[in-house]
Amino acid sequence: YAWIGPFVGALIRPVGGWISDKVGGSIVTQVISGVMVVASGAVGYVMMQAYGSATPETYFPMFLGLFLLLFFASGIGNGSTFRMIPVIFLAEAMQGVDRNNAAAVAQANKEGNTLGAATLGFTAAMAAYGGFFSPKSYGSSIALTGGPEAALWAFVAFYVICIVITWWYYARKH
Image (cartoon, rainbow, N blue to C red; front, side):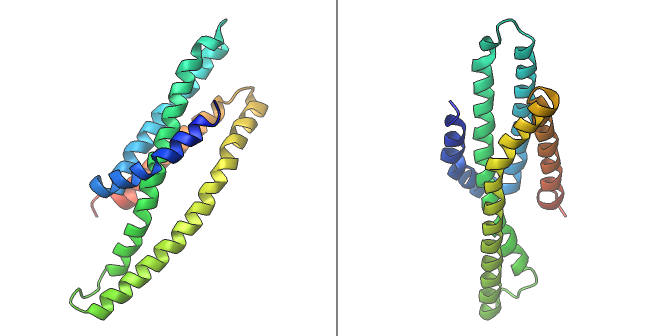
C-alpha cells in the first residue's frame, strides 16, 4: 500500500498547477493547506483510536483513505506552489517597468524568468528532502513517544503556519 500515496500525489500534481492558473495559486495553496490540516489531524485521531482498540485493523480503511487524501492534497499543493513561484518573480520584476518600453519589458521578463527558474530549482531540491524528512519524523515520533501521532500534530502546526504565511505575503490585499 505504501506506493499508492506518492503515486496519487505525483499523478495529481499537474492538476494543482492547472487549478492555480484558473483561480490563483495563493487561494489554491491556502485551501489545500487547510485540507492538509484537517487530514493530518484526522489521521492522528484515527491512529489514537486504533491504538486503544481491541480491533485496530478495523481502522485501516479510514486510515488509508485519510492518508490518501493527505497525499492528494499535497500533490495539488505542490502543483499550486510550483505555479506560484514563476508568477511571483515575474510580477516582482515587472513592478515599476514602463509597459510601453519594449526593451525594459523584455529585460524584466528575462530577469523574472531567470530568478523564478532558479527558485524553482532550489525549491525542487528542498521538496526532494521531504521524501526523507517525513518518514524520519514518523520514526522519531515513534521512538520518542511510542507512536507517530506527535509527527502528525507537528505537521498540523506546520500547515497552519503555511496558511498564515501564504495569506500574509500572497493572498491578502496590500
